[in-house]
Length: 315
Image (cartoon, rainbow, N blue to C red; front, top):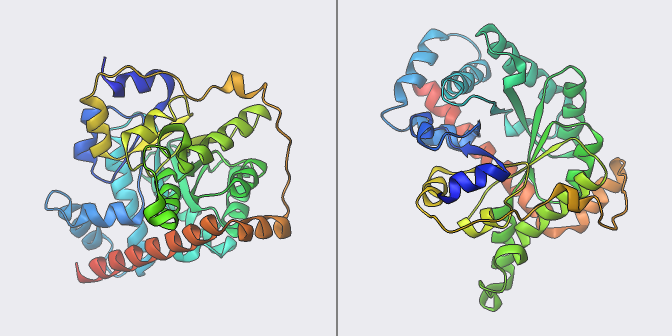
């Protein structure tokens, strides 16, 4: 049995791509998108007509509305391939505006529902800023489920759990990138692999905390740099994986065992933590990696959102 099939016995596998034509071969349950992935997809000949057709159908509407139409159009195509859910992202430029994030989420859900898709099949993807977490809290109370992304720190995860968020996406690879860059020539790849990988350690800590205290929020490891990171998180609720790494898992028959265990986590000697806005901001500030990677992630998504705007305006 290949590693992808073995992984599916422990963990829900999610495709991390906007390339829905490539997705079916890996039979993921869910799929996640973001502005960068959609931007990449619409520049390919296979997907360019989706953009031009959607823009033509909604010409004359405000730009932000057309962008949402394009995002949802991709989501609808993805939902023809996956049996589960698609994550569709709110514009990263709204990451510090709770009210605007809620309004954009309402519009995305309305577009899906108008197309006959139940809100249960959609996760609204929001950056895990304090403002984003508060928006998600309000949306979850309306039955609009959220995927909190750009999550790099324990305090972000705890706040999301308190907010009743449906799912979080802690970023394994970007945490790994930061620590590797900081270490420079002193970085020892072999010593920092597997369970010792700083990104893997972060997700493991969050997973164990949630399971210990019965927090229902689903943990979905994201942003992988290598197969070893994935294998070290087998047993996590979900893992969202790029097509190239899905292909590597599919081509490898090496035996895989469960690395994360919800039952074992319940026996761990952990202490519950609660954050208010002030203590959350201070804890995030104390974590240089998380502070830097959250800010950088929002900036990068915002750049790609602006590029998507420009493509749509030129279509």
